[in-house]
Amino acid sequence: MNTTRKAFTLIELLVVIAIIAILAAILFPVFAQAKAAAKKTASLSNTKELALAHIMYAGDYDDTFASSWAKGFAGDFSFFVQPYIKNFNVLTNPDRTISPSSLASVCANDPWGGWYFTAGGRDNPTNLPLLWGYGFNNGPGYNDDLGLVRDIANNVNPNQVITVNIGGVSVQTTVRATVEGGIPFTSVVSPASVLMLGSTNGLPLMALDFDDLRPAGQPAGVIDTPCESAARVHGLGVDAGGYCMAYVDGHSKWVKYNPTPSIYTNSSNGSAFDPLAIPDVCQYLSNWDGSSDMLGCKEGFPNGGI
Image (cartoon, rainbow, N blue to C red; front, side):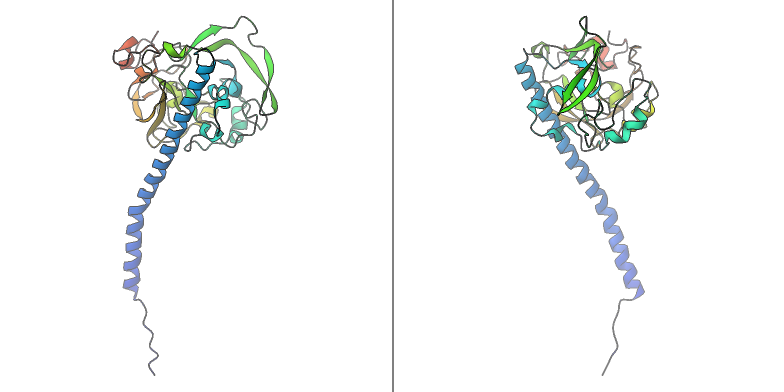
């Protein structure tokens, strides 16, 4: 009886391993791209739903965009449209997997103002699993009266500490001395061309200014605080090399990240030389007609847009 057993030779095994390695090298990037594309699609859907929520809000509040009258989470524009959102998951960006609790210690003494990210705190009242990932257009330089809000002096109760109820949790917040008042929805000249909201690296109050759109590791006019660095997403853009943006008319689209340094010189916000981030920064302007170069927007607002 022949008891000889056949087996693979060492060469044959090495050939098989080499083939598997080659296939893996080919397929893994494809899988990664497919995963990134799926996240981008989900993020695009989120911006669409949030835009519709803001449109419904404006319809119920005298044709006016939401106003931010409080600091932190309670003053975030997404906070005001929550009644119009059935699924709160749309507030989180699939690519921004940062938990508020992980920021609690590093952000507590932030030079720009302390954040309260501990569970039950002002900026994490309901113990959110993830930091929100979409900001509102309050200007390229943060509340510079160019976006969808205008500064309004609060002569009633500026800087007053009040208690608000958020999801059954009572938290203290400070009333703004200057309210970021939403402008009339119908005052936007070209709704299909002007930004409403989109992916952001910001903290409450989340916005779309040049600094908030800057990814981690990119040049900046002002060095990040440890808190800002911890909250910033790495890579060229938040969503697969760009940003998911929604426009005032309600449509959403993905725009490619633009690393070109800005020459925005509004000294009040310190965002000079941050990347322009989006291809056409004229889209920030509420009164932009969709074609002309207003306030030097085609050149990145060389005079600060003021």
